[in-house]
Amino acid sequence: MISFEPKEVTPQELQGYLQTAVAPRPIAFASTLDSEGNPNLSPFSFFNVFSSNPPIVVFSPARRVRNNTVKHTLLNVQDNGEVVINIVNFAMVQQVSLASTEYADGVNEFEKAGFTMIPSDNIKPFRVAEAPVQMECKVQQIIALGDEGGAGNLVICEVVKMHVSKEVLGSDGKIDQHKIDLVSRLGGNWYSRANAGLFEVEKPLTTLGIGVDNIPMEIRNSEILDGNDLGKLGNIEVLPTQEEINIFVTQSFKVKGVLSADDITAKHQKAKDYLNNNDVLSAWKVLLATK
Image (cartoon, rainbow, N blue to C red; front, side, top):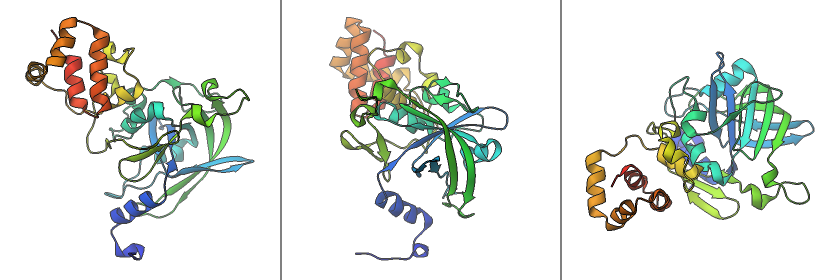
């Protein structure tokens, strides 16, 4: 066994130990508005429910370890005192990951990640239509736990209205744990799916993906590609060049066959096969290729 005091390792190392040891953690997909009314959307895995009467949930947008800056979500709840906590399931996890990209101030993560904004009833921030559960919350208190990189900020929220999709309810009217298909965060790229176990999602934090909003509508409206597929496609920083696409098609007889058949469904299915193997670049080459 190794033993150490927190100050004997770097903040990055300590964060890694904590996030991999205290896991899996549920994910709060927090929707807020800035002082000018611009929507913001970001996931946080320092999150849980702490009371049912009154209904209290707490999440923590921590100061960034690498440069000690704070996230837009924290600034927004400080300014406006309202937040929607959207619950994350497997069907939306890739898009949620894409929304964690550190886009510039004012960029709408709903659009970048391909989510649908719907109005809340009792507060101003928008809800995520795709989330199986949405909780409209009033912020009761924000407790800063420190002023250095990695320090958390406990945002204590009271749920003032809750929305639950009928699709995740069982015959008894209660949430069916199999139907809701929740996911949670571990350390690094690792997630856990309640219905299946561990899986990985590549972190998008080192690049600025093009976003789902920049994917052609023919692809976004595909009957084959789902939200997770679009999330992967939107997380690429630069699309392949025409020369790269031509070389790829020339070297792949299977892709040639799909293109020759001029079958859009087969083309999208081939791209999905690549996406299932986390080969996003090849998927894009198939989608952008022509006969």
